[in-house]
Length: 156
Image (tube, rainbow, N blue to C red):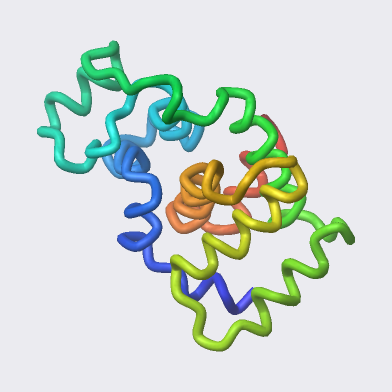
């Protein structure tokens, strides 16, 4: 899994700005970040003042049209498939693992795109719809490490 070394947190964050809440406190999880993405987080979340981000997490001060959000059920599917890919030896993901391992100096965006396309195909959606959710998973991995991520994901 040498490709993981090419991921940069700040690049991953560009694809899922609500992951910033993971840096504020240990009380927030990737599920909270995904919730913000799928519910009411504006696309310019990173530009909000910290107090407005907190208001958004605790309540709803901004809304986005439902037309611009993936269905909430996608998070469960994406998180489950990401776990199978990243934390297990599930054979369905051998091709993806090989593709990532063979990539020459991959960028964070390329890694996120490759994983999104493959998992999107597995769950039956376009990669662009779930790219932010894949970024949330990857940011979680960067935040706590592979072993901790997989242990937490396995127990949920």
